[in-house]
Image 1 (cartoon, rainbow, N blue to C red):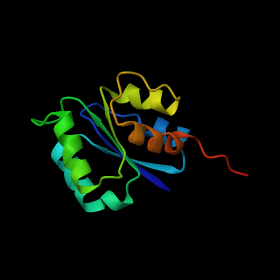
Image 2 (cartoon, helix red, strand yellow):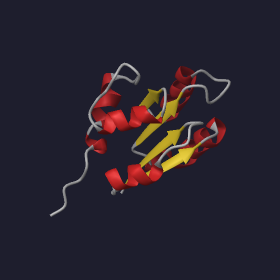
Image 3 (tube, one colour):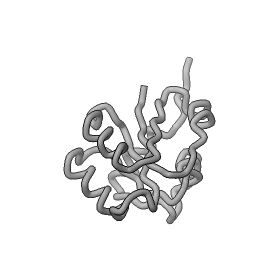
Image 4 (cartoon, rainbow, N blue to C red):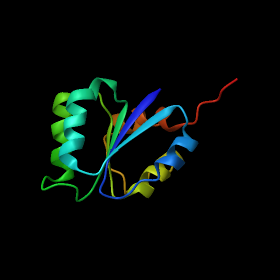
Length: 117
């Protein structure tokens, strides 16, 4: 089971995400401080984090740096809205998503549907 955390004020269609990637647990926090606390406690169990704009008094890049300071290898993708996650699942990494090349490469296999025999 893969664990991916979303920090976004927007409502997220978690049912659709669960249907699309059934072997992934999607965790959604609408408050930045709760999301950061969750990452601090359970960061070792997470495979990726999506952070949207306008969720805190902190700039998204500051939140990114805060997370990367504690969990350097955890892929963190900055997005504008929930639909950007759907684009990433479809393999469309647009200029609306911001991350390092290493983070993009780490998240791509996580967002591919598992093929079960």
